Length: 388
Image 1 (cartoon, rainbow, N blue to C red):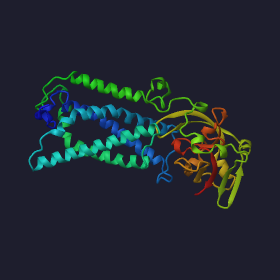
Image 2 (image 1 turned 120 degrees about the vertical axis):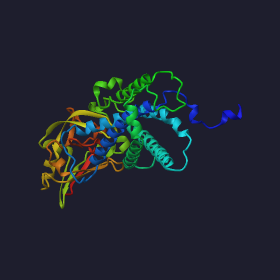
Image 3 (image 1 turned 45 degrees about the vertical axis):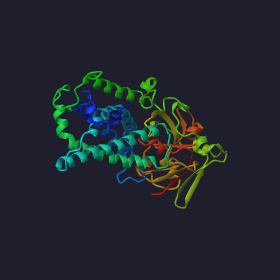
Image 4 (image 1 turned 180 degrees about the vertical axis):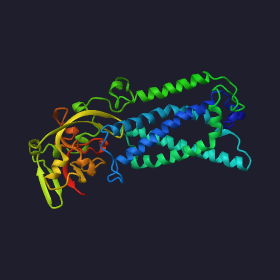
């Protein structure tokens, strides 16, 4: 191998006409749409999981969080092929000669800096997001906090990048995709496909990625959902994230002396499962939707939470801290804001789809409420404490 063949890549070494601003702008436009949808739905999801949000998260529509998380995961999944093609098209620019000191140099430094931050943040968001969908956490930091923080970094870098490149973006989007006015001088070799062919293949890849991960949210697409970590099925026809065994609650949840304590100040009552079954039962049709993007519709029967807190003299619109037999993990407790407690659809559920709750679905009792993240639909409940 000659020494000349060992030199670092140069911009001139990338001669394909496919690596063009015309292609990059069109892919980047849809990548930006995916990022915006993922960012906005991510903000909603983060807000929904706050214990005491400044403005109460609504209980209606009951399917709102379900749609939000479906859009979040589908947008993030569709972004993967878009990001790969976008990086492939702009890769040669990283090897372009730096201009002399001056305004042009500042512009190039800002442009490349924003790209570096954007690419790093995007890869972090996509990789950790996909790992979260499969519930694989090979890290020690908080996924939720880190994902939320880096989302702001990514969207900030994206806005800087768009601001710098906007004149070029407007120029190439206003012309035919095959126009060569904005091409690099070296981009003269025909590609294996046309620019339109590359774009169509990219759109198809993004659509396939979305459909192949949509089965967990859209049952009609379940048979195509080869990438979905959670598909339809499971005890009672509803998937399970965390089993009773993994939560370490099997013995406590099946104990004959299990009771649920309802507490308000110095007032307290304890109810066993038989006591709960003797109370007025109510049935609701509610979806359960998880942050990972899967969801399922189900019929739940149990005792209204507002009827339970009334037993200790608490108002219907009370804040209630829910505790689980599970002693570790992020889903061991939750807080029901006053509007959720007061809602007649919020239950301490005893049955799912007409059958007794399975152990993995929270037997002997679990919380189910409308328009609420699945991680907050606490299972294996052992205490409801009115805190406000």
